Length: 193
Image (cartoon, rainbow, N blue to C red):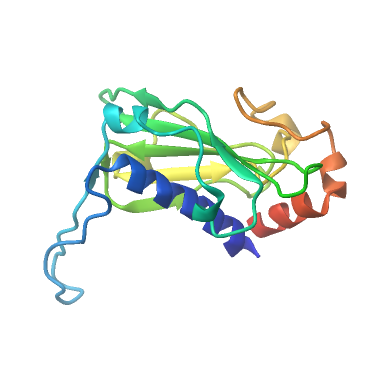
């Protein structure tokens, strides 16, 4: 079950890379070699201009799972400093098929020099809030794209850590625990466990 929501988020990440990268996804270069040989891996360079050209939606057909729609909020570019590389921030909402359901809000951090590796953050008692934070992050420093979601319900896990969702994210039709009565929201949460 977890794989389906993970697949949705990977689909969004892949679509963003194809749209933002001028050359698409390059092939890895270097030796195939043994485990003892160093393998040179290509990287994708992402710039402020790439982030700024991102559209405000992703076609439903690009997701590969049933969703109502996908909306992207205005992307942002964060200049690097001595402790963090430059990176783009893409945030959005995956809207449910059920008009009475809750959206899955997500955040993706794309480093300026992406190593074509990624890490999904969240869960572990923190469902209901996006745990991907901007700023200094060891994975960003290593070229990882970092992504995460609120699992399709908006709450501050662990007694409110992180508080309410920051704007501009979408919210469900009600606040509180009513999301647990919606079949699609429960399935989305189950995929994250």
